[in-house]
Image (spheres, rainbow, N blue to C red):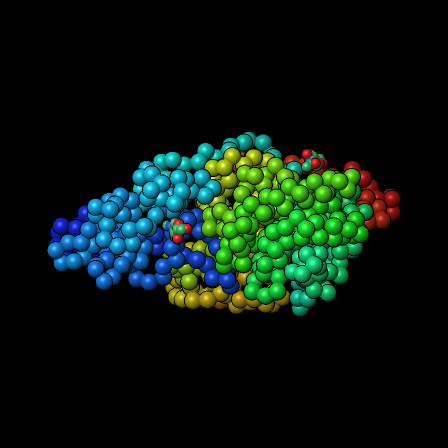
Length: 534
Ligand SMILES: *[C@@H]1O[C@H](CO)[C@@H](O)[C@H](O)[C@H]1NC(C)=O
Ligand SMILES: *[C@@H]1O[C@H](CO)[C@@H](O)[C@H](O)[C@H]1NC(C)=O
Ligand SMILES: *[C@@H]1O[C@H](CO)[C@@H](O)[C@H](O)[C@H]1NC(C)=O
Ligand SMILES: *[C@@H]1O[C@H](CO)[C@@H](O)[C@H](O)[C@H]1NC(C)=O
Ligand SMILES: *[C@@H]1O[C@H](CO)[C@@H](O)[C@H](O)[C@H]1NC(C)=O
């Protein structure tokens, strides 16, 4: 704003109003326009994109310099014009170059000036013709959020289990060590899709070695379901698997090849359902193509039919990103009827990758901030998704930073890098709940942020991690109930040392399921006395 005023004073006052508007137009485009790089996990971008311009703001044009974005409006006496959209900039009588440029959405100019009438996912169209969800875009037009006073989310407690965790040097959790009684579903992570045959494929030998051992846990907890989760973030990294989802969904022949191998797999290993973790359809930076949008709907509709034809009741779900950027590749309205539920990944909202996102920058923020989670869910409410078909994602891990200045350790202070990798998980920028518990035992400073509903732990001078402990997990669980959600899910069972699932479990209104290991065992109720204790 200030910059444009100064600039206007230099070039004369004639175009001041146009330049003011052009600079706002440019700033908005820049804010909404950051394409994440392939190495970044799910980052949080509530706003849409117009262009991926990384250069300095440039909202003026001249006879020799066209607009980087938008149409070049009339030139002043010095030959300088302002860039913008709509009839004021693109109209035949005023425009000097780039005059065919159309805005992303229509703020009321008509389709002559805009590519589309509305925005993806029903988000708001700003007066400049960009899509987004903040007040700059929506004014007061916010989505109505569901409100409940019951305990809807207690119905499902899903845990993803990392099949590869045995490869860690410590903090491992074998199938027989998975805590039972509280999880209603174990989602075995991950299997892959073979890029040539489209058959379900092992991720690696270790990960594929425990299907039957995990399914066998059903004999010890009779209401337990075990599903296979297919995909995950790394599936769509650069490499041979990157386009396997797109290619599979492209034709009914390829879909059928996948379905037949999946059904065989489910029967062979006695699994109860499948969770499709495609990260992400349509997203160019994740190997996606525009056709994914419709193909995913067709694929899920046909998969539902195929699963039903088996005569057994198999479950079907998909994961969803918590960012507008990636979520707009999902036709959630038309997907909803074909699946049991959506698992919304409301974690990883911030991390070291923020440093390359111009609208955020290298500032430490919590990765499971409830304010931002509530905003992410709004994208569903705008589309009338039934909250009962949505599960809230909970992290059994923290996102960590090495801070720049040991004197500035609060949320919003600058970071230089991820915090040092944990002793067992060994990756900078992330720590398992079990590792954070140990850091706390060794003496660390804990700050509770009641609005974001997170804990921030600092130690070793400049080390910082945000995570959910027993207290904040219960707050998020209460929030899931308040929003009428159908369940919660955790990433991942094996990152916990038992502390977090006990906390979640202790705040459920349903009783702990009976666990059988020789004799029935029930932790709290004491309704059954094991034979050998008498
Ligand atoms: C409008 O559509 C054209 C053609 O598909 C595209 O090149 C342009 O980037 C779109 N404009 C915006 C602002 O997205
Ligand atoms: C599949 O079976 C479920 C019940 O398990 C039913 O609700 C659904 O309508 C069926 N869908 C199709 C496409 O047959
Ligand atoms: C939580 O999110 C809000 C809104 O984006 C932000 O203002 C706040 O600083 C965040 N808190 C933390 C601890 O990251
Ligand atoms: C846990 O559950 C009870 C109801 O069973 C509720 O009153 C309480 O506020 C919940 N939340 C926390 C943070 O303990
Ligand atoms: C049964 O399993 C539970 C949970 O893993 C464990 O705490 C308990 O000690 C076991 N009981 C027996 C009798 O082995």
